[in-house]
Amino acid sequence: MSSFLKVSGMEFAYGEVTVLRGLDLEVEAATISCVMGRNGVGKTTFLRNVVGLEKSSAGKVFMGGNEVTNMEAHQRAARGIGYVPQGRQIFPLLTVEENLSVALEAVKSGTRMIPEHVFSTFPVLDQMRKRKGGDLSGGQQQQLAIARALVTQPKLLVLDEPTEGIQPNVITQIGEIIRNLVDEQGITILLVEQYVDFVRKFADSFQVMNRGRFVAQGETSELDESMVKKHLSV
Image 1: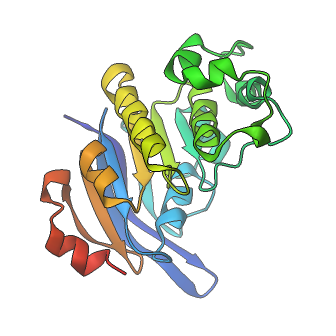
Image 2: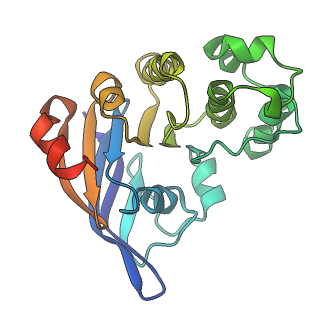
């Protein structure tokens, strides 16, 4: 298989503080790859650099074989990157339908219809079209955040801690939805996740980050207890 996302030599600093140190990553098309690591090691900063919300000081980013390094976030989105930030960031006073409609602004084709597959992927949102985002449970808000990214029909979906603050039965549901997006729609997924069992169950490959570097990576089957203890245990 060929890599859909390729990052080479990515570096980033906030002022004098270097946060990312020469990161290399390849994510094969139609797979799920997970970035893991303790808090504060640079995971979210890495995702923000991938989607173009931060400007790397060195390195290159390729998507689908095309370099996007110098593109702004909205240009990368137009090329097919969907981003679900940590904490969901839905609009609490807008209805579910209005939250999804906001994302239509980013769709190149100019369509003003929410794709039907978004509601078939998230039946609970179909039932709650007229309910305000702020009235949904945490798990429902997370589904809404992912659905909003899917409205733009991305080729690459980037998720920052999709299971954070969500009850276990909904975590499994979200994992199954993400897996189906890959297996049935061929979307490539890059996500940050702390929950080891979730990664083992749903991801294809992983990277462990520490102090701005990848210190371990491989197929999910290689994510053993000694690695978890060394790099992930608090």
